[in-house]
Length: 274
Image 1: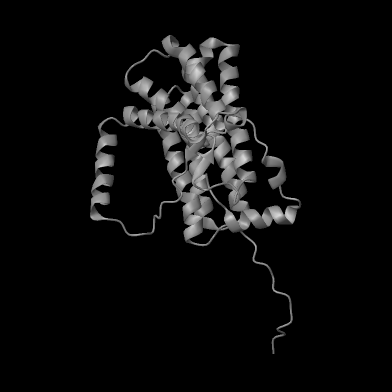
Image 2: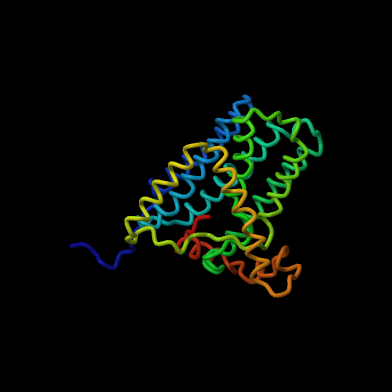
């Protein structure tokens, strides 16, 4: 007869499916770096967009299959730092900023540091911040701006040396947007499991058709418009603009977990993805 009072052994291991998708995104980001080192810039830019797809799938898959975990949340952040922090910065440097010398790699560092700070701030606000908006430009969108610009330049045969100063400014500005307080739509309120009108499906098909006409140009323009939407939304929603509406974060300290156990609990139950 089994003793029902015996303690239950905790099941060890990690969930395969969501972490497999995270690994695929990490691989895409790593491949993007290798491709840029070999001057295959179009392939490296496309790899960043592939990483974005996997990054969007892993969190939703974890929630749909109820396989959220603290490990998955931490692993996702590390993968995001590679795919949307280091990889775009190195692609930008290899494509158009190496000729600027110190100015070039400093612009890339501003972007990379901005991505790291953006991810750290996001992790401390899981379950607390308004889910309808991102505070600052999300790192995948920032990576899409860099990758889209490089892809567009390759497609149209633009000499990177002729736009190096402009591209350096864009790279640094994108890094600063990530640590700003501008509000960006997160689209998390969309119910992906709900039913929609048939016309919506026709619109989805139309979007795919439009993007396929010239993916480099269309995707680049879309993410530039999204980057501009943050300042526009913020300026329109405040009566009097203050410095705190643009930069600064007074809410980080109060929401830091007071113990390791509470941190693990929060990340396990929410496991939200950027």
